[in-house]
Image (cartoon, rainbow, N blue to C red; front, top):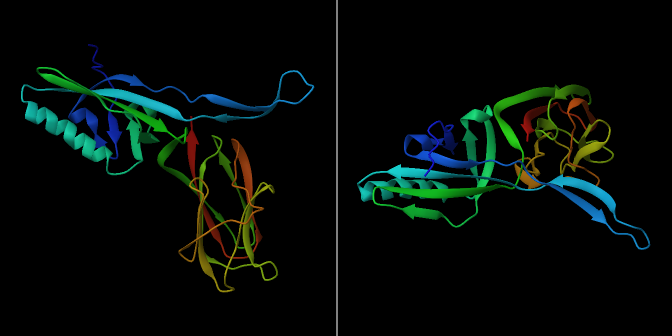
Amino acid sequence: MSIALEAPTITIDGTVLNTQFRISEIKRPFPPFNAQSVEIDGRDGAILKGVSLGTRSVSFRLWSFSQDHNYMYTQFQMLLELLVTSFEHQLVFSDELGLVRTVTLVSELDFDEYVERGSILLEFVMYDPLREYEGQSTTISVPSGGSAQFVIQHQNPHILVTAQAAQRDASTEMWSLTFDEGDYVRLKLPTALATTVSIDCKERRVLVGGEVSMLTLESDWPRLAAGTHTVRMDLGTGAATISIRERCL
């Protein structure tokens, strides 16, 4: 048995596991790169259409040491009750600079019991393979009908757009922001009156006046590379606020 005496502190949904368990067998591989290709009749090989990141895994084993089996079972019981409260959990390792992994427990629980100790292997999947910087967001203001610039260090950040008094363009009935004159987040407002708008580009969730809505078909969720970018209010009026939270591998 190999126990990591210097294992990093592991927190799930705000609960520190190290206070109740000892930790070993930590595995945190990087996600796979998946290539999409298409074969063409009469041509050797295939044509590369694109490359995407696959889902990511993370696992570790928790150990409890006690002659009192009731106490040991209670420790694991409380852990399992925490894990069944929701499908997704916020997992943080102390040696990852505060980066948050959104994980889902997916496997059969591998529980081993001994005379004076027990262990359980937890295996998670990150359906979104990127980790997010918790509490480290940049906020920029886009003036009504105007534009603003911002800089990001990593590609594909978590972007949240909010407007407290968005008003649609009179001719198109649209309210819209464009990123680098290419990716639009555009929606049709149901009223000429000023209304609230919220667009979560990571979760792909749109609210208008507190009600669930959607972007137009010609819209495209922004996928931004590291560097400097410009956002412009190309349709409608009403100042907007953009919260940008960096994500990384």
